[in-house]
Length: 463
Image (cartoon, rainbow, N blue to C red; front, side, top):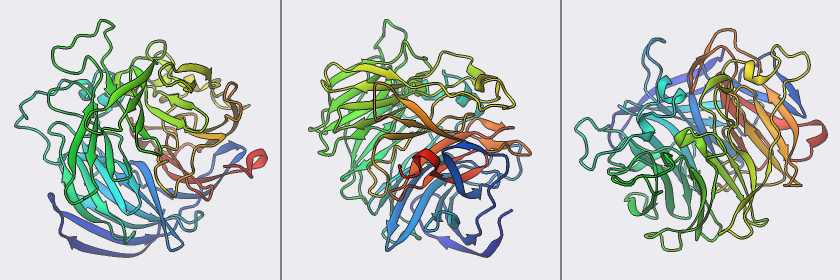
């Protein structure tokens, strides 16, 4: 158990809900036993103490390194209801990740998504995901939102912008609301925020662009939606389009590539007020149709005209078609095509299950190193680190993109008692997030806590 060296409560004035900060230092926890790995080794660990934390973002300043994450509110039936919080961690020494501060927000929604670039940090707020939502394709993220804002709309939804020029003390600058149930995966790029957002008059989530060059006064400047999302639009294929996010923006800021069910879509965003389609590749079918998660993440290799694309499973123990995990040739962005698929992970010799489909929980791809607009995050290269839910972290070599190879993996040890994950309380380790910093440290988290990993063995000098 973590040892608290010091603790101090302080009132903090902010826009909207009352918040307070908990300032403390925490000694890193010992790495839990039971882990298995090939060409990857754990070097640090921080126990989440039965809290679920979402995505990561990172910042280096004056030789010190910080990770930010959003900690979700506690789940009913599991102790007192604690509010969500923005967590600041010092990871200057990656073997000793240390919590500096939790800034708690008493809100009716939840915080889970986070991104940053330079001195600007953005936190997403949305309706709280329930266990039903995470296990069923038709959930609140596929609903039509009425044009009239409902009386029971969340008070706390949309985005919060923070100044992190003092990395240990984020200062809230402003908020922006969708007018519906909130946002999902977002990024910041050169003064603009690119959102996966709900919106009045639309079904599921669409692509929104905000001008945040003045972060005290964010302004919506553009949007794009798939056919079938506006009221009255009927698709013949029966697919419910939805944008998971994040969008990935080209270095010149003029092109966005999105995983937007049912497609991978390239948009011309040189005119931010009027995004237009350059080209698209249909992903669903043949891969699983589970609405928002069907096309989960995209990573463009701009210099190689390639795009990595993956989906996300919904149903535990392989109870649906497989999710996309592919490389796309995008040399002609008007005519992209799938050039290869990634190998499906196999269990290690002597494992307790014959295959990962027999193991509890979801089996399939989830998050990759998405924060590539961030100056302190490793840029796309020949190794892809992929969180694979009940199969841990998988490492793929894509030096030959027509023949991706698995070259490493890490399986956390299972907890002694069920721990909270995105899908509720699980009796096994669940791996959901990945971020790789420019030092080669791999941060990953799930149901038990945050692991810090390094490539080792045959790939020790690569990251």
